[in-house]
Length: 162
Image (cartoon, rainbow, N blue to C red):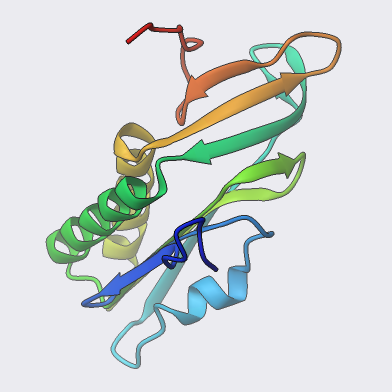
């Protein structure tokens, strides 16, 4: 996949694979990126669009990103998490554009020799992505105006003039 400057929207280095895509995410493809004969565990997190937020009915989510920076941030997170937990591989894919209810917006797969490290690493990678990666979401509600948010649960975004 390429962006408007014909640069790939994916990066890989040392057992870390990250991607931004506009099509539905492929669970099997993401898991295959982390398979290793040395791994006794693969943990996959699939973040899906739910039909509500704070009691309001959600119609869909729309994601946007500063792609080049987001990819570098994701790769940095993946490398750090891989090193800290002794992973054999880590793959993170985030979907951009409109993500309907019930479809995945993010996949994180990790492989490790043992399950405990894989569980911890997967959750840590997710939390770091939500806190640091340059991806934003717009929640579209039924019967109301949508709201932009940072790519984590929390307060609505506010416009700044700069």
